[in-house]
Amino acid sequence: MGSGRQRPRSLSLVVARSGSAAVDTDVVIVGGGISGLACAVELEREGVEYALVEAQDEVGGRVRTDYVDGYTLDRGFQIFLTAYPKAVELLDFEELKLREFYAGASVRYGGEFHRVADPLRHPVDGVLSLANPIGSVRDKVLVGLYRLQAYLKPLEAIFAGEETSIARHLEDVGFSDRIIKTFFRPFLGGIFFDRELGTTSRLFEFVMKMLATGSNCLPEGGIGEVSRQLAGRLGEGRVHLGRRVTEVRRGEGDGGCLEVVCEGGDVLRGKRVVLATEAPAARRIRVMGEEMATRVTLEEGGVGTVCLYFWTDRSPPRGFGEPMLYLNGGDGGVVNNCCFPSCVSPSYAPEGRTLVSVSLVGDWEEGDEELGRRVRGELAEWFGEDFVGSWRLLRGYRIPYAQPRQGGLGGRRMDLGGGGVVEVAKGEVWACGDYLGGATLEGAMRSGVRAAREINNVVLKG
Ligand SMILES: Cc1cc2nc3c(=O)[nH]c(=O)nc-3n(C[C@H](O)[C@H](O)[C@H](O)COP(=O)(O)OP(=O)(O)OC[C@H]3O[C@@H](n4cnc5c(N)ncnc54)[C@H](O)[C@@H]3O)c2cc1C
Image (cartoon, rainbow, N blue to C red):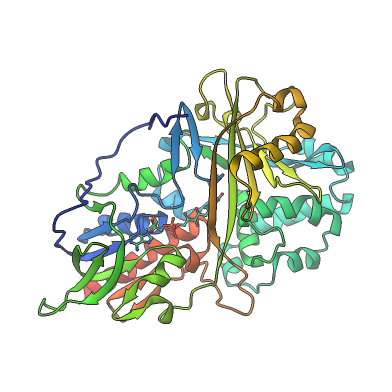
């Protein structure tokens, strides 16, 4: 398959890859993922001079979309939650043309599909689901009550609250082992790439609140539209692509400027620096002669996923055409969750075609073809051999570091409410990103904006 670009619209980002890059500015932002972009948007809004340096050929970091032969392929399956407060502040939802998923999921368990519905949005399905084997009637009532409580509980209380692992939290609430295994494990496994449910319960409560107060969607042009929309808010010439930063050091005789050194020797000069890279990359950057890791406590390791895309010229069989998330509620198999993105937004596939997205949790040794065969074998039991036999592998994305580990237990407590910005060198260098503020689009945006505000205070003061 070729990769004919069918970007919904283009951006006028200035690419400056070679030559001398003696940019003199107030703030240099290193990293053009969601946190770096949010930081830049805030600085732009405040009228602060800045330059953003990104190692890749496009901004977005982990939030990018490829356009291949008329298909819209997000680099790993991601969902946009409309209730994210920072997203409400920073993004134009109408322009994103958000298309909603069904509020709930269909769980494959015991050789059949069973619906778990949001009882307030789909009351009939909610009642019908009472008798299904995905937990007891008591579990379903608890889901309803938990949803109500999530709706009512203020965000601040969630962020500041006690934390334990999600597994422990669910037990404490009173959920049965069965619903934890059949529903919560694949559902949250797909969100946090952690089927063991060791992630902090504060993040679970946060996501439940977001699901209770808004909807889960895909932007018509793919999840990468979120990044592109933020980048579209930046002034011309602010973004410098294809530059990997290796070091931040003090410049000599330069009026106290900091030098941001890129691979190949290019240097950008700024008064303040924001490191908005993912945690493993941040570890490698030297700041004032020391590795970043010695200055900031960085969460060890990350969690990964594999996302396989298939196409078919067949429509999903009867009963499978809804914008539904399908979960593996059983103990075996490689698939965690799957969906038909083109049933959520037809823009994800050419007319007459269906796009299939299948997510696996963790790293997998097998190649895409082999994994694709296993996936098809497994899902033929779900959707029928006829339909699945028509699937052709389109592309596989392997994302070994999709999110930081977010155990939060006994280690660093993530500052979910504040964005978790760290002052790496006093009044000069800050670090932001999802490993500090929570690995969601909201956490990354919150962290980036907070970094900009802290700097702005310093710049304004000084
Ligand atoms: C597959 C997947 C599914 C997800 N699902 C969801 C979801 O459904 N909902 C949700 O809210 N969140 C989801 N997330 C999490 C969310 O996407 C991330 O938390 C967020 O995008 C992280 O943004 P960031 O800016 O902190 O980091 P990144 O996106 O990693 O950005 C860091 C940037 O820094 C650049 N960089 C690194 N080193 C250097 C260097 N030395 N010099 C210059 N640039 C450098 C990188 O190239 C990158 O562009 C998902 C993530 C993945 C991967």
